[in-house]
Length: 115
Image (cartoon, rainbow, N blue to C red; front, side, top):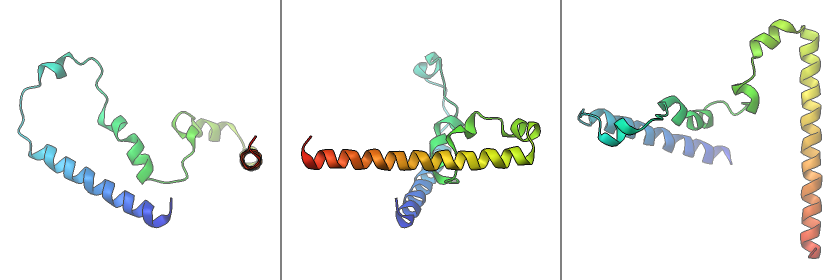
């Protein structure tokens, strides 16, 4: 996704959310409906908008940020070990990238040859 299209998507999403919030604020307050009271599992608003917030936020988020205790890792390891781990993760990510490129090239060759 290009930077311009990313900015346009972000802007349109922010506008849509602000319009929805204004409409919800202007709506009259009524008693909860029967269907709402029977509902057992209600998803908090933070969970509903989590993907949107992640999309609008920093693009350098790792998948493991949600369930990994970085503070405990920082407290239990030395700076030297953390630097070693960082470079090891970078090397593994680079290997995964090239492995993916190699597989994509194999698939492309197979499609060209009709295999």
